[in-house]
Image 1: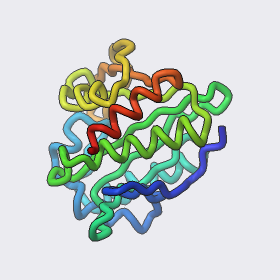
Image 2 (image 1 turned 180 degrees about the vertical axis):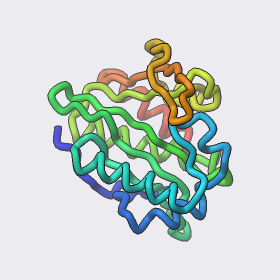
Image 3 (image 1 turned 30 degrees about the vertical axis):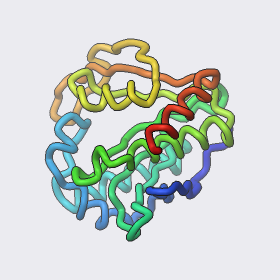
Image 4 (image 1 turned 90 degrees about the vertical axis):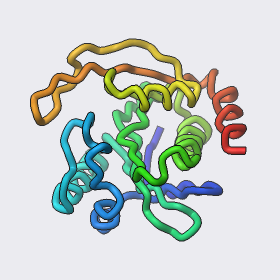
Length: 193
């Protein structure tokens, strides 16, 4: 499983490999406090967003992540980010995470199509047998969104991560297995119709 930067295109969104040049466009749409309330570190300024992008690109250089910007097909505006992370080629496993959309594009189908693109690539091109999602216990909207994808909740890791503020984060893990992918794919396609 060789996970490399790639452009993935759908009807509504396109996922493009993240570059440092995306920091300012991301800051234009991503400095909303509600996006960062339950994240490991707040992103409040253009410089914070630049650091966020630099960190994602550093993880990519180390083979631990492949970050994308989410681009709206109509108009070409960047509306958020997502990434493959915690990549474990020997186990044919990866995580989809670090996903956020500017508030005006939430609940529009953009996230559903982005996940369909990422999952299709993971299972059908990369040969993944397991795709993981995790979110904080306190993040009810994210938990519900992951369940709507068709992922199975597998358990809670208590005090699993610590935010930069020192807040201990209980994380809920979900996964989709290769055998579950055909049903999940159809569910996502029907939601987009």
